[in-house]
Length: 259
Image (cartoon, rainbow, N blue to C red; front, top):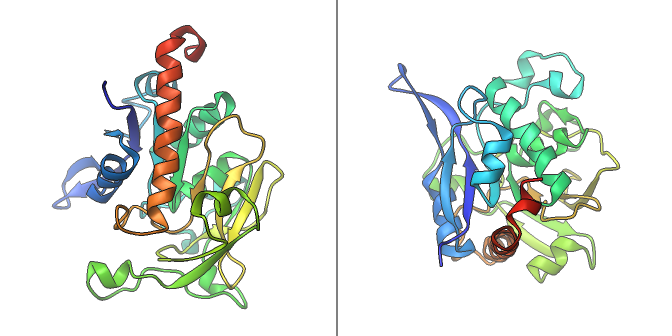
């Protein structure tokens, strides 16, 4: 039986500062193959090349990855400042519409870092441009120096709501995670459940309230060492199970999923 397909939302970069490419980190593909049991497919996140309807037909689920550009503040009704960093309006156009469409019909999505922020914005939330500038907040950014292992090292706890979705998925109410992000949720919205926080109060785990499908998103990077990490593995296993269930139902009722 063919594996279910998960579309990985790619990022636009310039190779050698002159050749434009769409890329996604290998560790995302590894997590999907080794833990979720899915086939990864990198998506060129630009509406010039793909559409929401085509993507949803071609894929069984979607992984919204991290990325250096941030969601443009116009998407949540604010004016861009230097603190908001760089942007990728083409990815905004693909990711936000795709998230809303998947949520509406129950097609599984998993958000990571920027993907976590995209889920928040797509559901009507806003973002702080820089968490470390807020009173009482810690610096959640990636360390500027060190090896890959040092940059992705576990740095703080995340505590989930007792008996909540993440508590059930992880089998623990408190876990250790890495942290490599600058922005974070500013205004909570009714459409989202903030299910996990860092010790400084920063939201770290969310899902869409009353959604018919899998909509979990995390602010940390579970794709790193996913097969061995006791926090990452159950998250990708749960996502893989949801994608497999969607794929099986889609094959059984293709007209239902194309509606």
